[in-house]
Image 1: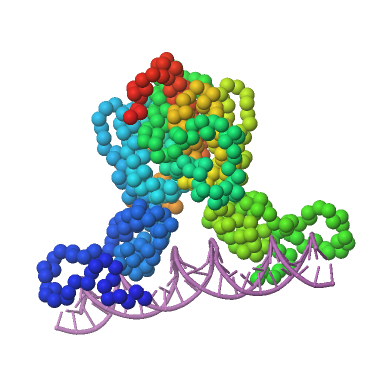
Image 2: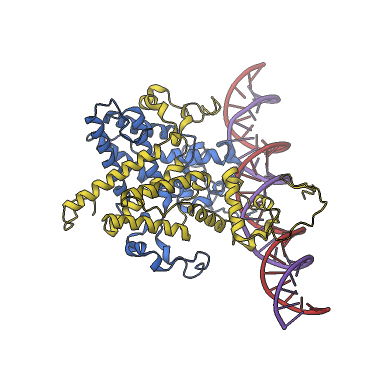
Length: 250
Length: 250
DNA sequence: TCCCAGGATGTACAACGTACACCCGGTCGG
DNA sequence: CCGACCGGGTGTACGTTGTACATCCTGGGA
């Protein structure tokens, strides 16, 4: 199959005087390593979307046979895990300017940006149990900041979860925008899109409901959380940490 | 195929005196409606997990041919949309006790519980664009409460997003618990699970890092958000809403 | 009574993940 | 210098998935 002499990208250079320096990697196929597979997969998902991530498609992208991939990744699941960790590696966890709270804010924002940069993958970053080294370090840094801020271990992990589930969930919510229009009238019958008088509040704010798109929307929620964090910390500080049953703890 | 006389659940009752009242639906297969298909699918996913949702599996569950389903749902995607809306229908949006903030808290909690009750499905409740009537009403109620609370449309939708992306993301994060153990040593080489001295903070709080499981963990984050909400509202109230460029808005 | 429309069925196909057997070229012991 | 070895790429093949298509069956209206 696919017997054209010059496969895919223009690689039909003349074969004359091909005795050039044999020390550099000229065309794409270097040895094909695990890292190269994962990078290519991430790249593919970024530009074509998740369902386009097919072992066959990835293989052709790498100009290699599908089964060759299995010499570098156990199966597709592991590949996705590796992709997620690669993405998490883009989070900048090294900022040290300002107090712990500003560092925390910067950290979570960077996390959000990494997810947004690969939002197709982010939709899958979910119930993944397998956490890679980058993920670990990210968690480490966050918890470290919270401890430095004065949180006790139990609450620190609570806050950590609140921040990261928010950031993770933010991607998935996707754009709720088209809400009233959809494809026009095509499936209006399936979801009997309620008339405007049944949803007055939505109609009132509908111009602002354009989903995740509005710039600063993520930051708004983040500030809500951080305000809560500060409040929590202040109230814990003025109560001398003896009887904590005033809160929500059971 | 599957020619056993009594299929699946113990339905091999004796066939004597089977002239009973012909007005009730006895065994499973009533006419097979759209609603029945969706309910069965939700049930199947709840107990077997998402990848078990197969048109064929669902069909056998309903004791029907696979292709019969397509007379009631256009394709699997629409089926999932309908399942999500069915789940959202379980959210109680009718509570009216207390002020708007307590109502809001109850509402979001109910949303969270619905997601938790079908956490397999919740992992997919994500970038879904198609919103069903139940989803619409849920949004409507939430925005309504926020407007009642005094938020302007723009901020109301911001808060709405913060609350719901948090709740949605909370499911997906899943249990990070096994972190250090995993299957013991099986794939320790793949992710070179960093030694404890590299992750001191995590080791310090690790007993509390059991993921989503800790009861009250969701509520903790919710309270953080609601505290932020109140703070936002208070500060908006004392500044007479004229120049809003003091915040994060561009 | 006949007819027909709508729902259930069976067959079939393309695409997917991946197990298995093969093969090839570079590396190292003799 | 040669032959065995072995890590990695290839081709083939199988089971499973979603679903298009043609067919058949059944129950209600003329």
